[in-house]
Image 1 (cartoon, rainbow, N blue to C red):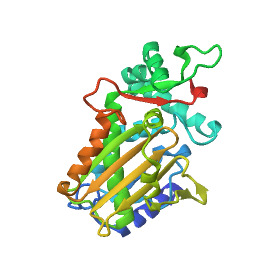
Image 2: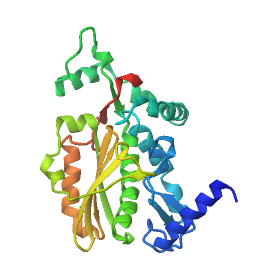
Image 3: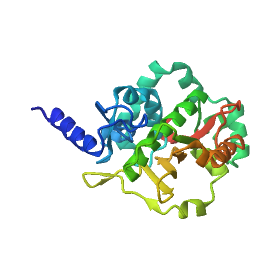
Length: 285
C-alpha cells in the first residue's frame, strides 16, 4: 500500500472515530469523505495541523473550494513567518488566481492612487522619502471575496466547534461572521480586554512544528456549548470573528450587533461601495 493511501486511511480512521455522520449539514447524512478543517491550503507546503480531520458528506466537502482558495491566498499576502518559506506557495497562488479570478485580481492589485491617498489620510500613513501615494503597499479585497471569507468562516466554525465540544451543529445552527482586514483593525481595533477574557487558546502544531503564526484561534463558549464565539487569526493578513448559536434566537441580537460593526467601518458591509483594505508585505509587490 502506498504512503499516500496509508495516510488517507489513517485520516479516515481518525475522522470516523469522531462520528459516522457529516458534521456540516446537521448530522443527517452518513459521512463518506474526510475534511481537513482548517484546510490544508492555509498552510505552507500543505503542512496542516494534526488531528483536525472530520467526517463529511461529499456535498459539504466540495462546497467551500473557492472560499478556501481565497482564504489561503489572503493568508499569504502578509505572512507572519520568513518570506522565503512562503514565496513558492505565493507564486503558485498568484498564477492560479490570475487565471481563475482575472477581474478580481485586477481590482485587488490596482488600487487607485486616490484610494491610497485616502488610506494615508485615514490611517495617518507617513510617506517615506521618495515614496509616492501610488507606492503605498495596500490591496483592495474584492466584495465577492469578502462574501467567500464569510462562507468560509461558517464552515470553519462548525468544524472547530465540533473539534472543541464534540457537538455536531444542528440544522437550526446559525453562524454570524465579520471579516477584519489588518488595515481596518489598525484603525478601529477591538478592545484588548475582549480577547484577554477569552480563556481558551490552542496549540496548532504538526510534528512538533508550531503553525500558530499561520493560523490560530481563541474561543469562549457557554457550558453546554450552545453558544460560542471564535476569533481566528490568519497570518498578519486578517481576522474572522464568528459567533455561533445552536439556534438563531440564542445569538440573533449579538449577531446583528456584530454585523453593525461591519456597517460602522470595522469590517466591510455587503451594501457599502468600499471593500476591505489590507496592507501587504511590500516585498511581494
